[in-house]
Length: 359
Image (cartoon, rainbow, N blue to C red; front, side, top):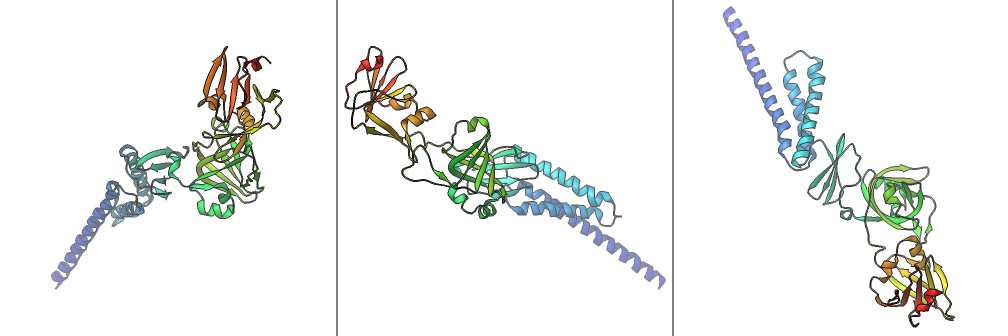
């Protein structure tokens, strides 16, 4: 009887040991599979991250089972595994240009996604990955891949807008309402009437969008200019109703590249030259307007502003030369260009009088 009792105890112990060993082996195999498989899946899914985290937990459990608890198994080993797999995931994505694991996706559309990690961000532009270490880079994809928002829509209810687009990249088009220093501009919603010229609009006081650009980008813009910017909607100052756009990228547009000219002829032409703007005079013309797709400007304004140059005006004109003077024949008026940097905008019906250059 005693021998039978001892045999039963020993056999039971061995069975428990065998079962325990099998459990640990199963846990080890499952944990390794859960940690390894995500590195071979080139698709973005949150389940890769979940699989990796569960694998790390099970791998830690494998070492804890049957052993005395200590800080290494409970705290240090998981941290080491997290650091190792995070570094491996970064290098794998950076070198092989494949989908990361330790990341949260902000999908803007089918062409653009932003992957946010702890120390870096990845712009996915079509099928290309662009790394942004420490979140320093401005928007890196093609701005035309994002749908546009009008500033009037964006600022209609700024609090609601912020809740909808908080920490998302958005593209905004509007007019510059204010330029502060060498790096800051403001945009506000506005009302534009058909009679308004030179880009003028009436800005609505109150809510505004703040954008920080570098000095080189900002110096080419002025108040009332249209601008399109892609950036991250980062902050909302509820008190002042100010939205802030960071990591901006200005979209190049051709709003001010194409234009037509409109001439207002003088009703009483006295053949007297009138000073128009620097180095430009008019003869039997009251004014010349430049019609862009979006705005109407006085020619004098855009010449002074630099939106249009003499070269832009005469690029399609036919030319007659005499005594080093040039008569450029445009569709609606002519330009007599003199040697002394004097340019005369003339009524189309007038003959080219080169003696005007001497006046």
